[in-house]
Image 1 (cartoon, helix red, strand yellow):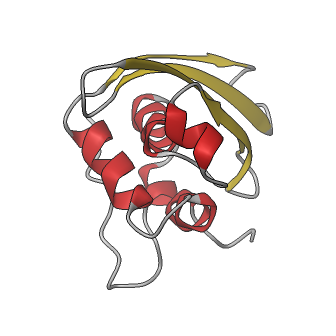
Image 2 (image 1 turned 90 degrees about the vertical axis):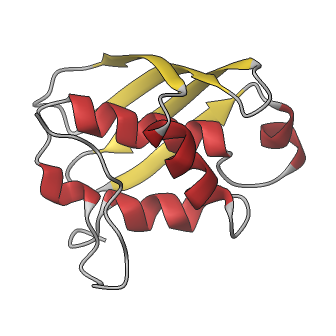
Length: 126
């Protein structure tokens, strides 16, 4: 998936069909309250820990590991009930990845898909 994007990887890992859009909405609405990464920006793999406010107001801890060269999700976890109930990424873990990518020095093009029907994540790159 070297030519893919993180959007494609997140959609692929999403627990349910609507999970990606719910995670995107959380991220755009400021629900990702904190993110910390381990590794340097020159590392192939980056691990991101986040705190995400859920749609009902609960705070969840997330963990997402990303392969920055292959644009893939390596690992993920969240302490929300859905993460234990469904296989795949929950909306909180999905929200964490683009929040990190939008605030790091990663090229914004990695958030876009080559398919014109797909929308960018809407991250402000200022």
